Length: 135
Image (cartoon, rainbow, N blue to C red):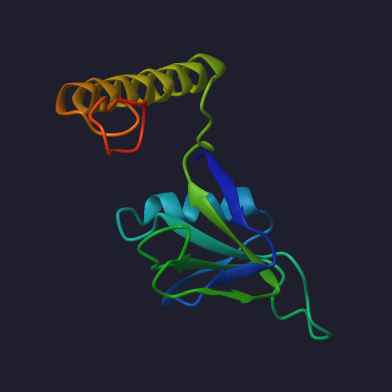
């Protein structure tokens, strides 16, 4: 099952469910994949304390979101992963978003300026006593 790192040396404070002990994060991902839809995120012990208690331990994280907005993060002798490939926006998508954002901002400014020109608000006002162009 494809997976990607979400938090290195930290995990969500969410509840978790033990999936077993494995040699690699890939094996842990496969165990998590077998437990879908409960398991979308998993924790794999990379480091060991003096007794080797964390290395290879695999847990299903029951966090609602990989950013852990409700639970928060805590330092750990393990790392957190998400099932699925790492989301990557390609260059064309990024350029499209920038172009659309720029076009929308320009249109909003033009509409605001046209509205002010019609209503006579500064700096388009030509009436005496108002800020803007002299009347």
